[in-house]
Image 1 (cartoon, rainbow, N blue to C red):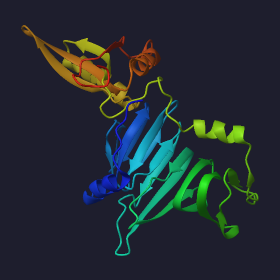
Image 2: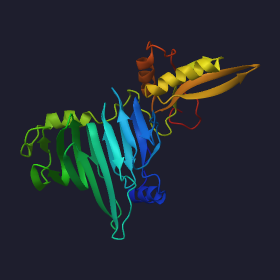
Image 3: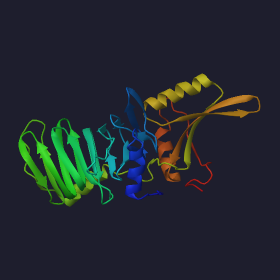
Image 4: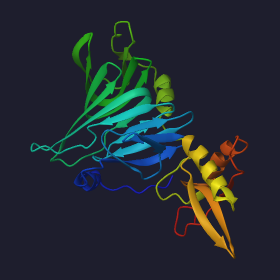
Length: 297
């Protein structure tokens, strides 16, 4: 996978300098949506996110989000994440703060390195469990009111209404809080089980991954009827497909074209096209690459 990284403290300064945006979509697999100010739209690679936004993924959908401090959030399929206080403000004491609510689905947070002059205080709410993070790697899941929190490495504090606050500092340990019963004691997790869980939140390379600057395109339709093109576009947008509509003039005729752009590799574009092929209301897709200097050259 092609990706450009900047030093974490450079990213933090750049994003925190823009008060409205403190995160961005660094990769995704449709379907995935952004709910912002009462409106719902498909997630797109490179999209800026603000506090109070909600990110959702559908079946087979996943998302990779980069926070202002260089940390990464990974969402598995059928997940819902609310970005509360994501506009991570730097306090006079040099602390970056944030609040994330995992309403449903699997989630992984991986802390990135930050400037020695800054400190991180991030809270994750998973059902009725609250996790305090400084610098750590943690996988969690919220399912029908139950919470599972697994520490991969680092240290975190845990609060639950039925338990006094405690610290988790043993790698590959899990805390499970059922929706109605008492929480279970923290215990080790089988390495194979943890590997399986974390795979749920990783982008599936070659299976339809979209990245900022990805150069492969799936062409969906070319029609002389603008009304037909708009109707197809509307259906795809509702299904979480980040489709774009463009116009092309050929002689005296105008063609309205639909496409999804930003696939990282030919394999990703082909896999996405294969999933759309034959679906009701979806035109026959084809794979192209026509962005000079992109990853497909």
